Length: 408
Image (cartoon, rainbow, N blue to C red; front, top):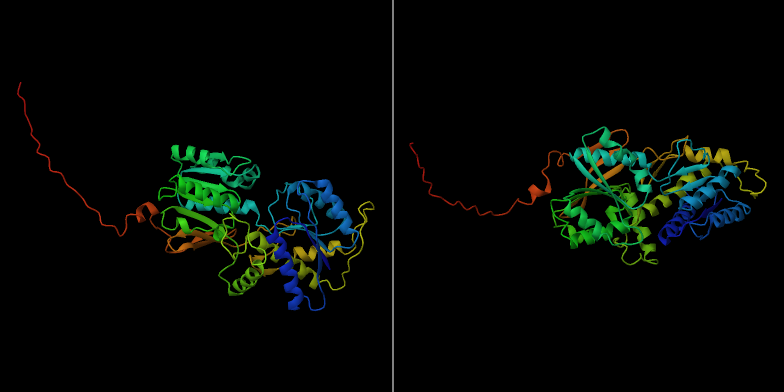
């Protein structure tokens, strides 16, 4: 089975290769099959180049296509996959229209309508009445639609702000928020942007117990939060990577050894040796496709021509097997909605910044909603915590008061 990767970031490509090599070495999942792969680098914004490269690869025989990540090139490849019956695997968020007809498609990224509900559940748990939503690009408004619709259903005042385009300087925006006393903020941005925002907020005196930030990035756990541990700031987010599982930790440890050969970009804000969510999703994606391969031993790949529109004869069955797959991966249990291929059922850890670092304080899943640990229920806010274990000097000033009664 030939798997084809189409991503630009080195960490994700490394995760792809790492997964393929793990499966080929282990022989537990595919004892009689060896996975081979090819990787192609393209301009993510060039849909014409994406289509051409896809057709070139399909003519050689491909069982599944992974990526590309950008919507314009991804949509072009998706159209070809639909026409030729080849599974298209995504590990990044993609906006799905309501009348989605992409039958040869699955996404391992958690469905954002569910993620949006998780964020709303947190807002309600914290009893926020006013919220500022700061988003990176216009897709953020689509991703956070459940939250944006909330004021009409809940007693919630919402202010929406956009991060400046083409610059990492968020100070003017943060200054406005500080002036407006906007203490409850949701940031929808990449982990790189989140790392920059935290540094700038610290420089502006906005990392105190008065502020509470929720980050939508699932990579908050991998950020270097050492400078903020004793600041008193409230910082909350979600994690899908199942780091508490010993088997998962073992795989991540092996990954980090290979990752040393391709160190992270400087100023990425990530801790060394941490596997990002994107990389973990790619690792899981290769395994989910391999489950489909395992259950379809008679499947063979064949040359497909874009100009003939003759679909792969094994494609429909193979796609069904992938959608029906159940896998316990690095990102927890993986199942798909069999109609639209989305991952609507998943488990999240709720994490929060403490003096010891980021700690798990609860869980969330679509069926049960938010489940905070007992220690969190009724827990006072950090502004109260900041007064604990301190000696306070109380001074009483006695004033002599003279009462005069006037008779007229």
